[in-house]
Image (cartoon, rainbow, N blue to C red):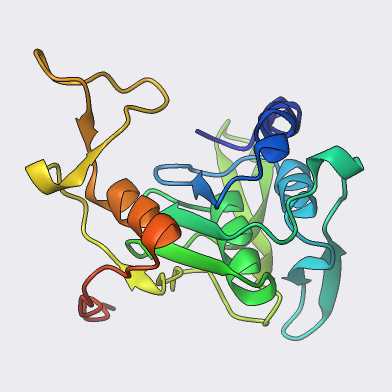
Amino acid sequence: SEFKTTTTTEFDAALREMLPHNPKGIILDLRNNPGGFLLNAQEVLGRLYDGIALYEDKNAGDLAALPTISGTSDTRAFTTPLIVLVNGGSASASEIVAGALRDTRAATYLMGEKTFGKGSVQNIHGLSDGGSARITVAHWLTPNKSEIHKLGITPQYLVPYAEDTASAVPCVADRQPPPGQATCADSQLAGAIKLLTTGQAPPAVAAPAATN
């Protein structure tokens, strides 16, 4: 749900449970994830590949490379096919993770809807009247040096969210099935499962027009 202090420990535990079963693929669901701690984003990326996690642009081209942070060998999923689910609620650290995986990791696809577009680093300064001012001091760029801020990230597979009878999936996280049913409905998760298990991509959908 967000990148917090417990995220890396929880992610490692999930990988240790899952990887011995040699899964066909992994679905990383970053939908409605508003971000959080950059350190934990670097650590999650370090379980999925080794290299540059992002660039910090401090002054119009003054780029500082920030690396992934690796874990132990039993938490590395460097080659397992991966689909990252994103939407308009995916912001900040979750966009860093999605963009880095798109740019850097083989056998990785983004699916869902365009992300929020929050890629700035801000300092908060207190004012004498009790208010505060947020000053942007840097922007984050993906490993391919693509800007995130105000642009967002458009996934390779655009899949609008829908809950229809053709999108039956296991209920995950805290979702519960409707009364009298055993499954949930989620077109994006269903599309990711189908792509991983059958290789069948979802139907092409035109990207929404850009807005100012």
